Image (cartoon, rainbow, N blue to C red):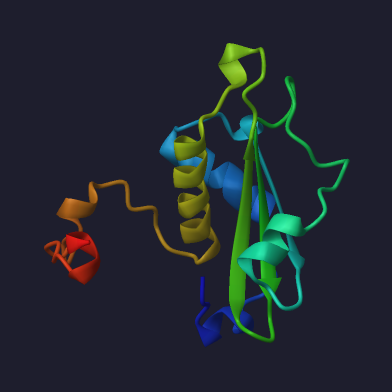
Amino acid sequence: FDLPGEVYALPPKDHDAAAKAAARLTGLVQPSFVAARSSKLADLTLESVHHAPFDPDFHVADGGPAVRYEFFYDLDARKMGLRVVTSLGEDKASIVDGVTACRLAFHTMEVLDGKALNMDSPANRVGKIPPFKYGWSHYL
């Protein structure tokens, strides 16, 4: 994601608190099921996020967080990357599927941005969803 310049004027954010707030406000999962961290990553690309090492102290497991979010920032290029890890463990009560985990990640980004969560259907939002237009790639 490309980040607007005003993001850099904000004080450091508590990503874990934002993820827990998004979980509480949406009701998608229990706040204790999520954990988040942030770090800087120079020359941020999809590949660099994919190959960033996992912190052994920050993992998903039965009895621990079912979803882990790692926000990576490249402040020089004004980019952000996000890694989402979910638990598909044995305890069915703590399983969070990837779609729900990603949805909660986007709500976490709204909290971090200081915006109110928009829980309405995208079709009901201001500006609505633009009509889909077929391009040349759809005819191939």
